[in-house]
Image (cartoon, rainbow, N blue to C red):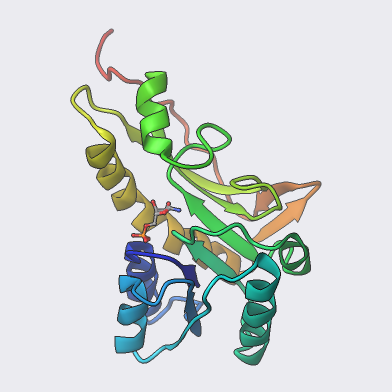
Length: 208
Ligand code: GRF
C-alpha cells in the first residue's frame, strides 16, 4: 500500500485481511511521509514498512519498484497517497495499481472533492475505486458507492460519511481483484458475477 497520512483505509484493509477467508494480505506499506500515522500502524502490526521520501517522481518510482519487487507485491493500493506517480511506473504496473477517491468519478477529481460536490449542489456523491492511469484520478472504474449529501453538511461532515463507506468499498474491491474476478477490457472493467442494483436511489427519498 502507498499512503501519505491518516491511514484509515489502510486500517480497514488490515481488518479485512485478518478475516479467515479473505484472499489477500498486506505485504508492504510505503509512505512518503515519516510522520504518517498509517505507517506507525503498519509498523505496530509487524508489516514490512518503509519511508520513501519524495525527491523526484523518478527517484521515488525507482525505490518503490525495488521494494515492490523484493516483496513480490501483486497489487499496489493507493490510499490517501498525495503524490503523482511517475508515468513510466504507472505504465509498468498497468492494471496493478488501484486508488480510492472520495467522489463518484469522473465527477470532482483532484483536491477537495467533498467541497466540489457541495459547491455543485449535487444530492449524492460517493467514492470510487479505479485502476490508475497517468492523469490524476482517471482510469477504469472498478467499483463505486453512493453517499447522500445532507442539507447541513460541510466538507468535514461529508468527508466522514464518505470515509465510512470507503472502508467497506476498498476491502470489497480488493477481494474481487484477489479472487480474479476483475478484468480490464477496452479500458473498461468487467466483474465476473456482478449484478447491477435493481432500483434507483433518490434524494429526497419520499417526495412522491
Ligand atoms: C480518503 O478519503 C481517500 O479516498 C483519499 O484520501 C483519503 C485517505 O484517507 N484518496 P485515509 O488516509 O485512508 O484515512
